[in-house]
Amino acid sequence: MVLEKKSLVTHLECSLTGEHYPPGVLYGLSPANAPLFVRYDLKTLKRTLSKETLAARAPNMWRYREFLPLGPDIEAVSLGETITPLIPLPTLERRLQCAAVWVKDEGRLPTGSFKCRGMAVAVSMARSLGVTRIAIPTAGNAGSGLAAYASRAGIESFVFTPADTPEITASEIAFHGAKAWRVDGLVGDCAKIVADGTEAMGWFDLTTLKEPYRVEGKKTMGLELAEQFDWRLPELIFFPTGGGVCLIAMWKVFNELKEIGWLEGPLPRMVAVQSTGCGPIVKAFEAGAREVEAWDNVTTGIHGVRVPNPLGGGLVLDVLYASEGFGTMVNDDAVHEMRAKICAAEGLHMCPEGAACLVALAVERQSGRVGPDDRVVVFNTASGLKSPMPPLTQSLNKDEPVDYSTMQI
Image (cartoon, rainbow, N blue to C red; front, side, top):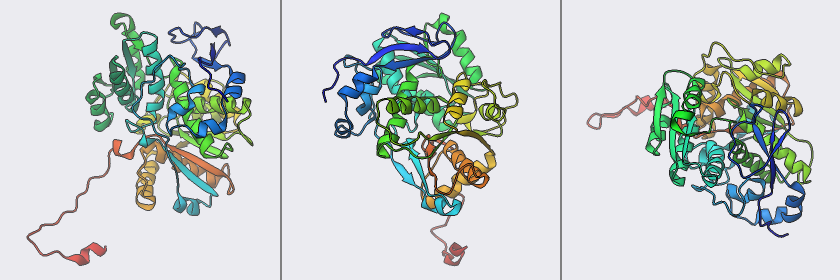
């Protein structure tokens, strides 16, 4: 097998109309106001790349370069994006009577979340296409990802995040060099500020699905998973869903892998996990709809799923229907309880969004939509250290006798 010396991108395609557009041009949404997807010469990819060649490469997300839009002439903006591990949860497996449950821990990436994948590719492409200023609305982690990669690339970044974004994440955004603001509202309000300021500020709008390359970066989650499972995927994948890009991205690359003959067996059932305080995609799925209506009364405090009107909601629904998957809404209190239990019982510190997926798994194991023989992967989308924890309140006075009997309680 010989490495192809040029980009394998053939064109970009409107997700609504199917109309084609040439590569090598800076794009936002298509003229139909829909997201654009990157398409590849998969026949050449199949001929020039083998699984064996792939296996011999360095363990980072750039090992999948042929599946990405960066040609050999484009330098990747990288901060060391390692392959993230699959961690079994044996205690939970026994309690739920599941054949196998793994957590894919995205908290190991450079800024502590899965957002690094999309930002690394999107910023690389933006720099190659001459972008010098980028703006983004964010629930938090995408902002710190953009700030880090933009600084690395020498690109000016502007980030707008809701006022109640956890302090550590909000501070991280500014600490990475972004010009950052808290906004008294939700991520949609932040998105309006970015859109309205495009002409005045001359920035490129990197809002979720408004450009085509964050999806491509997030495909590497699915590529890693396929390789880690020796090209036979698990039965179900649970993912916390706000904008839904990761479900779209993984489904896209699973079909690309299927087309080149690398996958064995059926594709996974994809599961969108949202909150009972903001679940527009799940609500639409349960109604059998093809489009998502905006969620009116947002009450959840789980920031990563708090997107009341996702641009790609219809595309996420397409994934759920095509994969014979489903959506599940979970209660915030149950999520916080699960996060604490898993941390103490399994030693794995998950973010609230990842813990939400475990709550959803427990619900759906009881409902029967997850069977006892199913292998399940749950995505932990960020390090638990980026979210608040209960304070440690117990203390000892070194000058007083220690009553060790109280430590047995």
